[in-house]
Length: 345
Ligand SMILES: [Zn+2]
Image 1 (spheres, rainbow, N blue to C red):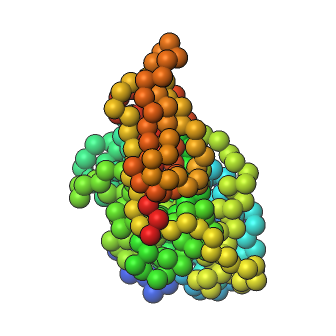
Image 2: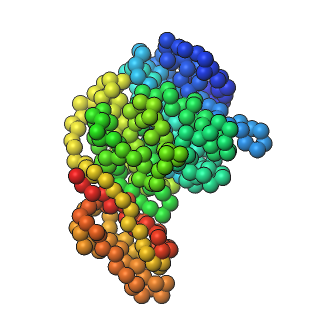
Image 3: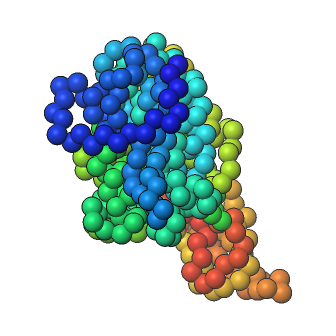
């Protein structure tokens, strides 16, 4: 294993029209890496106010032979660290002597948010809502532009790993455009609890000027699924294991690794759409449901109390569905999220 721990990559070789796409991966000259190697390097994306480079960690797994380029991105939301742990476990598990092609794994795409243990970057911008960024835009826009220019175009396949946001819990679910057979298969192979058919790029509000990484990747013709691996700011070993195994299944499916011969079951609940239900009053919120639990129309999904503990209101499910995500934070102004209800197809 080659470990090049402080290898700063400053190459900006956009003029290379390489026959061998390995030569231009993420603008890292990976021809210097031997076959069957694991390499740990830094990629420069921007500069901070001290004039120091802002670098992100990149793990390059180079296989025994040519093949696809498989991307794994984590923590574009800085506090979604189950994804970081999945990258670590996956890299540890993969035998590069059995690998075809190249894996580019990014344990932390948002280094500022990661260091602050927060979702957004230092300017409180959500990096996963401002793709493609701007070359001459704000600090955040330039950073996202660099991700778009230097990283995304290299992938044939991509799994972008997330979790719930602060104060919320998620099931383990996959978001993908299920109209596409390859993407549907990738989502299934993750073996999540829930698969959400999502042609929108995110469960959040998206306008054409504010895309997610997945939407940007899909527009470039890259097969991309989003893996939502449970809860923020924690490492949940069961989720890490499931996420790792799920990505190993996909790597076998795209012929980059040998099949594990593990039986793939399809127990996921398939949802055609989902939406958040919000409070309309402020108070202390109790959501007596578990993620991945089915609810019936009219079933109690939350009880809101005033600050003295007196019940203010019960919230009922507007239709049959499954709890994809839920609030875990009782402190709820009017307009607080209660549950993300998935509607099964
Ligand atoms: Zn996220």
